[in-house]
Length: 97
Figure 1 (tube, rainbow, N blue to C red):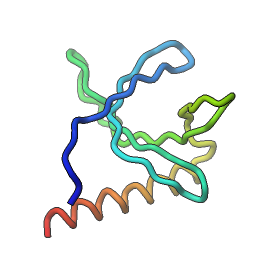
Figure 2 (cartoon, rainbow, N blue to C red):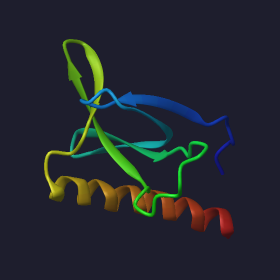
Figure 3 (cartoon, rainbow, N blue to C red):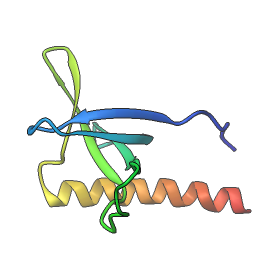
């Protein structure tokens, strides 16, 4: 069983300058590429967005700086999503046993 710790929040700025706060869930390496999973945080006054779910971003290094980027293809995203789902559901099953 893993230790409970304080949540980690990151702020991302998109290409249009909009800032979104995300809660870090976990990282996985898939075929040599690191991916990170996040959940969007709720902000006061915003309605619940039914499409707001797991956000998967890949880690890229550019000029020695670690950046987060969207997946290049739908296939890449689905492969990463499937791996995160396995990890997250396996953790839930272990905690419930």
